[in-house]
Length: 97
Picture 1 (cartoon, rainbow, N blue to C red):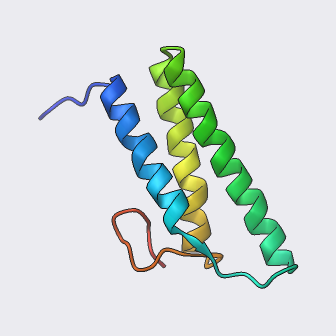
Picture 2 (picture 1 turned 45 degrees about the vertical axis):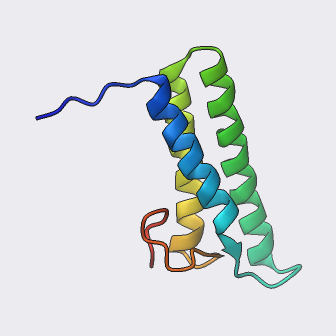
């Protein structure tokens, strides 16, 4: 069994993957609806965790960077999974409904 080692390249890979997911997913909510407010909150959390991951990485804190980027992607993935975001059929970036 291969052991996965946490390193800067791995964290950067997931930052890139999550950035692609953030940019690809598009809202499925109606303007000024309650769902749009919920989605905006979810996307704000995703962006905050993405920025946290970059901050932690820049400070050499790989463990927190890795954790933060996974939280970020989870927020985006959840939006797709519950139907607030369109993942455009991409089952690599998202867990599709």
